[in-house]
Length: 250
Image (cartoon, rainbow, N blue to C red; front, side, top):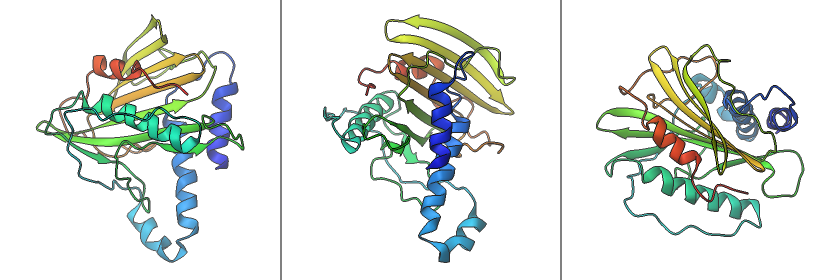
């Protein structure tokens, strides 16, 4: 997990200017670390997996109309993951059409969880505290207009920074908004035909970021994503709503 530790340590200790929650470098480190772990016990399959490259493993799942009750315990990392995953799943499903198909985005060799919203928790160092981890996941959403994605990244941090406006050449709109929960960075980015809405919340003790785009392919640094629907799965206002979801605390 050294790649994850390095990326997360750099984030939570970085001074000004804030490096923000672009997500790409941190998630790339997390995926690389998980990929190494998964391949260690499967040397015989290495040639096949490398030939396949990064892929999307899908698990059909229909959106639910009613929210399920979420657990409240957070004493262990497993309990914290269960609680946060439930809160996020309920919040995202509430914004989707009832007939939307939700599938988990995974790397090769990783078995998708029964709940597509079940968070991955990559430990940050050797801290015994449940919240000291990088919590993230991504899902593909397919409806009548095509396929897009929704991603979430949660980082325990006192860093007050978010993705700074004007620092990304793909940015087409950006604004900063103070809220009772913390400062929100809201931006829309375009890379080729793919449009991404991104909202990051800097709350006390935590950084919360949600993104949604119009491609149902797993995000990878340096890899062009195909456009698979006219617009992102969620509007910027809906992504903002997700970032302000109650219960996303550690």
